[in-house]
Amino acid sequence: MNEGLKAKVLRERAEAFLDLAKSLERTDLASFHAEQAAQLRLKSSILRLVGKVPRVHGIRELAGFLAKSLSEEGFEEQALKIREFVRRHKEELMDLEDAYSEARYELWEPSRTSALRMIRAVEELFKVLDEVEKDVLG
Image (tube, rainbow, N blue to C red; front, side, top):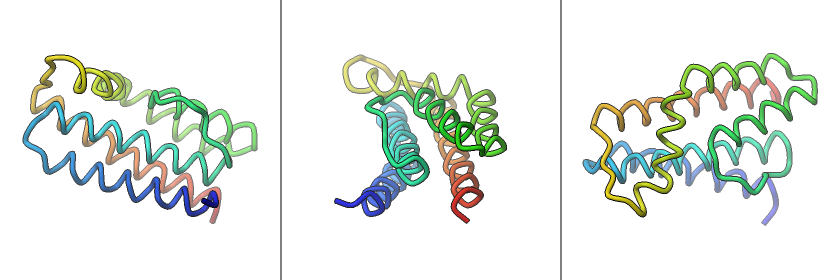
């Protein structure tokens, strides 16, 4: 599969996971799907902007990789947008990273408020990544 097509498929999957997260009543599964949405959307952007995706799953680690790569290519303003997003949503991103394993293996049920905060953070992440891609790719 070529890289452009792979990035497109990852983005479509990310959007589907986010839609599913928003539709679920169970907060554990909604949080897990929100995490998957964030992870895949970041990987899609990384593939489009950097050309290779690191073999990591952590949302903050992926965002850090993207910000560092953009900075190294001279896109400081775009790197800063990503870093500021991570700073503003550190708590939600940590909760999403917990959801990756907790929702699958533990008796874990985040509150409705917590799940909604995670979903809103992922929605904002999508917007930030759209802006960054537009700035870099035109």
